[in-house]
Length: 79
Image 1 (cartoon, rainbow, N blue to C red):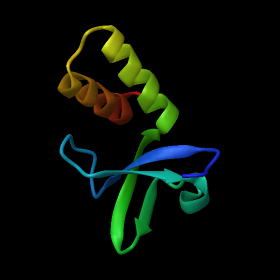
Image 2: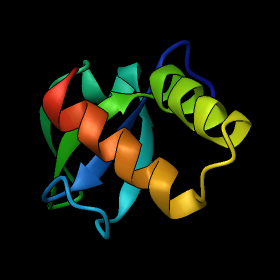
Image 3: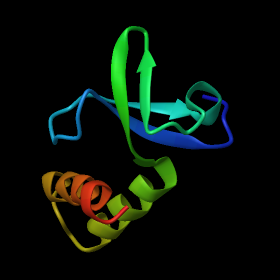
Image 4: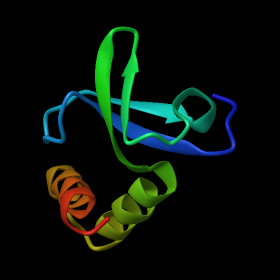
């Protein structure tokens, strides 16, 4: 994907088992809520933030599930 700015969007809701999609700003306009191909999405976080949180979790020895939960928690409570 050729974009200068990518964000992670979750289909329908912010839950741990929700399908995700990485979209460029050209498609989203950085809107929090988006409808694409008749599906509703909500922005989780910019991709760079997801990468930073994931890297910190991996460096700390956390499991993939723990890292995913932290990313979701950060998006809901701290972002």
